[in-house]
Length: 255
Ligand SMILES: Nc1ncnc2c1ncn2[C@@H]1O[C@H](COP(=O)(O)OP(=O)(O)OP(=O)(O)O)[C@@H](O)[C@H]1O
Image 1: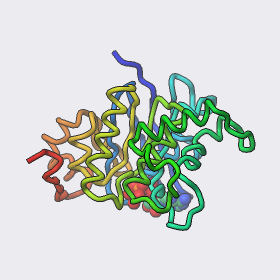
Image 2: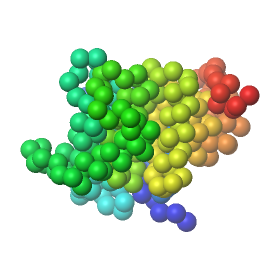
Image 3: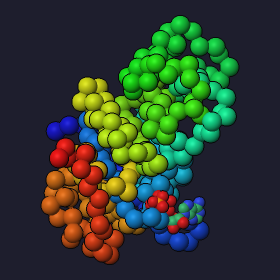
Image 4: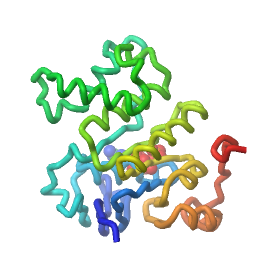
């Protein structure tokens, strides 16, 4: 059996006295691509914040690579790409290389100048996401889809075992979105990078991810993407309270 790299056990969370997450239990295996879905306000971002140690854990247990979250300190093993990543405007004064270099500041310390080895790693990460020719371009002058690839490069530069992506394709056109999923699948296949991807696009996650966790304060489903797709109407009725019209882009299926 493959190693459980993330283990979430009986996690609950409330803001003030309002419960947002109730008794959440699931895991992520090495090499797994997990899609986290759920309606607006269902607690997806809250769950990510708990997993990333941004919010204090008050109920339940979280282990990363077998270590309790409270003791875990190998954060460079976990790459995070936030929802608000594609918000740079055209005036933002940083090049693609500089933005990707920021992914190393945790390792470098904020004021140490990067050496040749670091610059090579940055260049490699930029090439991995297919943005090699844009390395010296101002980040604000790229499209949303291109910016999102740069944020993947920034997350990759510390050579993580896991990527956590919070709605990475919001505001990205369908063609760039398809290429973005291809990139994620390649990183998974060639480097064995595990992923948790939060998305509203049920059609995309159920075809691109291996497994699905469906959240609405409680976990209503956790299992294979194929089984999710086969029982989608019933799962969504239970969790969302109604069936959700799922948009299947033609290009997702190549017909
Ligand atoms: N810091 C906070 N203080 C109080 N309530 C909060 C806070 N952050 C989120 N909430 C509330 O908790 C609930 C869950 O929010 P959360 O952002 O985790 O949901 P989500 O599933 O990520 O939503 P969306 O899909 O809209 O991003 C929402 O009702 C939200 O208003």
